[in-house]
Image (tube, rainbow, N blue to C red; front, side, top):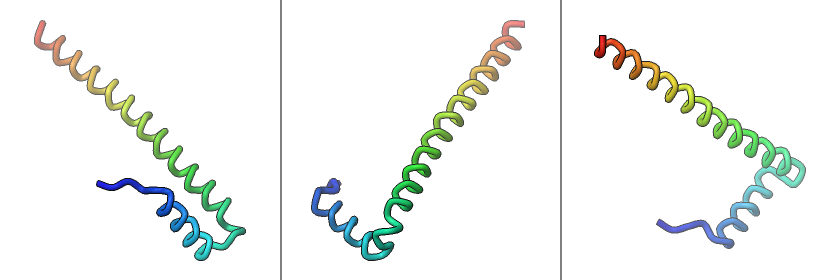
Length: 67
């Protein structure tokens, strides 16, 4: 699996500049950054809630077995 190098990044930026224009690029970059940040936050939040729920269910099972 190859990694993206400097040449590829420059090519992507040039294509984005041609497609969106110089005025829209900062807004586009900000939007992508906010989307990535929101995705990461939702993954952290969702995982924490799931773990807490699984722990509670395991405790309930343990309590019902020991009774």
